[in-house]
Amino acid sequence: MKEMIGKASKKVKNTVERGAVKKFAEAIGDVNPIYLDEEVGKNSRYGQNIAPPTFARVFDYGIIEGLNLPNKGLIHGEQIYHYERPLLVGEDVYCYAQVSDYYEKSGAMGNMGFIVLENNGEDKDGNTIFTSKSIVILTEAYRKVQQV
Image 1 (tube, one colour):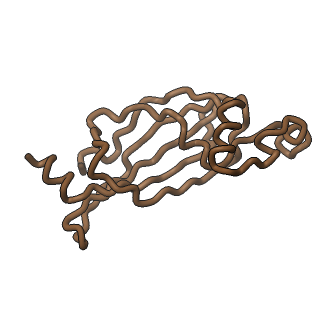
Image 2 (cartoon, one colour):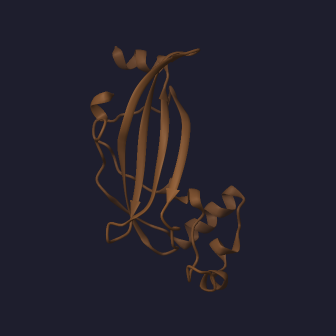
Image 3 (cartoon, one colour):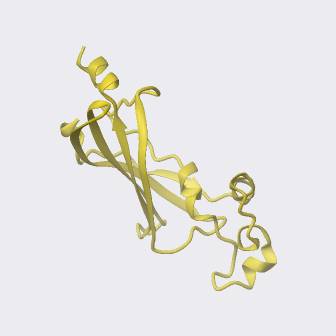
């Protein structure tokens, strides 16, 4: 996995759609009017509605060639978001993913690998809107299968 460090996907255009924001806000139980009520959005400091902070999780970040993580044998270790500004309802966001680190540790579950993935979202001018970092833990069971 160390050879994957620095590899990134191509940018993918995503749109912050009003209906998707409404469904997401309802699903997470946060129906703040700044997300849903157009009048509240117009009168806010942003001049329009925004999306909940974790909404970026639903975006398409593309495929990092050569990174083939399975659906089994992985543990979601951590998720951190950093925003330069909120996501605005109706805007296009250009997203990509990148492997920023890989390391290994021994633990109660045996030898585990930790892959650090960064997701990035930019506006049409290439300015950063947000970054998120997630740590995916590769269990010993997964690692044994990969070595075979």
